[in-house]
Length: 376
Image 1 (spheres, rainbow, N blue to C red):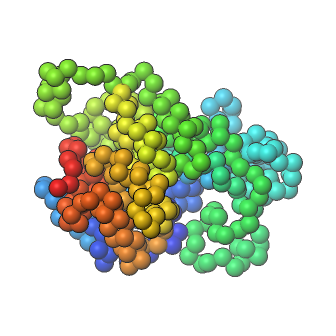
Image 2 (spheres, helix red, strand yellow; image 1 turned 45 degrees about the horizontal axis):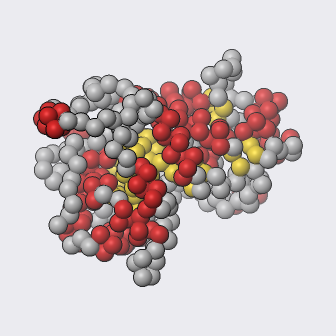
């Protein structure tokens, strides 16, 4: 499940038919909420058994910590400055004029936006969360060319907003003409990808109208680490090597890399050709593709863009999601719906397809080291 947890009733999760959920943060206000949820009902390494893993209803979420591109303007690059605190006043205005496009000249608007925080502080906070929760992922992160930032909250909006809504969301507010420029989004994304590489955690990645620049950004992190074609003998040796474990700090003993070990393109909206671009054997990062019924536009005849992309994805790299922020029966229904659609497109038996998708998720989050084969 991608998205915020602002409307996520934790008490609804234990009774859901879904055995386990991935709950993701997107901005400053919900990082600690995800951590609190993980502390309450998170899957712990000691909960995992062998075989099919008998998930407990009391411990059934895997947390993910990350900063969504919609909110990337709310952080500033402090790597080349002496600033180590949140920006206010003139510094805040200068920052927003630098990262927003077209360049805004409404000083009052810029001053009303959230005070930007240092990127390094967020990365350090996320590192601490990942150490605290050794099964945690990084997400939701990514790039978005279409998103415009909303107007700052007015006193009236604050008064009328839902009492249980997490502050800082879009919440249906009117949008400004301003977008976060791509270079700043890339800066924030790459910092999180490098942390994922350091900690050897999987990543959930958002990409809207930015498939080309997203691929180029991801590729820049694994440049120089591309896989070479192995000989038959080398492949056999690799098959018998033990899988990397996690040390006490939650970091893979396999060693840090500047790119994540596994990455999911969530609610994937690209074409079958884009799928193939990510499946080049030289790419050292395992790329997964996730689909939903809330975002993806499935066709009535089963021959549309989404279905064509699903067919192009190897069976072992398919994932499903709700992309919803409210747990319960509705989320279960959406998950069932997308499972049925994927199984129909792939011509899988439903039971076998559910097992395939579950196995794929286990490998993606790092709970299994074996890439599953095609569903019968």
